[in-house]
Image (tube, rainbow, N blue to C red):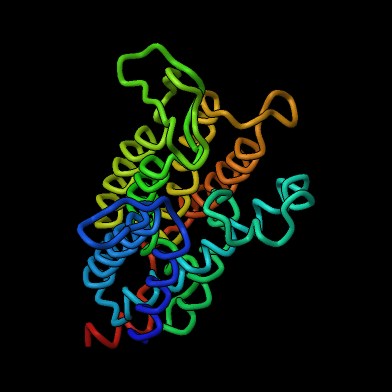
Length: 276
């Protein structure tokens, strides 16, 4: 497994991101931060597994989920931006920009469900354990969007912390300062990750933690879109906001189901075997 993970990380770091000189080498900023986000998510996932007494390869699970998320994010971007696909063709699939949050979320969830089944964990239980890692990994990955200047920032602002990206992948006009929305998402994402980790240490019914993740992350993405440069499509809302509403609804449904459970989350076979 580890050789394949190494090859995947090497590919990601050399394909995605703006290059910065580090000694004799050029390091792609987005790829570097994606690697840091993957490692951070793997550490948090490992802690979740250890606390739940689950024997599973956290690094392998997170690495494969990240790859699935990248593919899903690119494919959703193509579906979301048909004009760009018509203009540039299949090259948009390996360009340095164009990663849709919702596509990555859906593909990542599917990857986790498949791997959870292989590890002997039920679907919602696996998602509960992965939720804090997902929040932390997403938050740290946003630093890569900021450093590469991929256009995932906000509208112009006069606030003192506004930033300009004249040399970014998607540059801002000279002298224009914009909202550094990736930094906002970093702060909020780490807060969500801490909250989910704290909640995961208590007796919660299956599905409650991932429900809270979908709710909180959906609300956060919905709100930040008001100051991002994405165009409105329906009722003044962007595609990302519509997808965020779907995430919020799904989270509320899972939380509603969870509170109707009268017993804590049942232990999985691998957990019972470990306890024995």
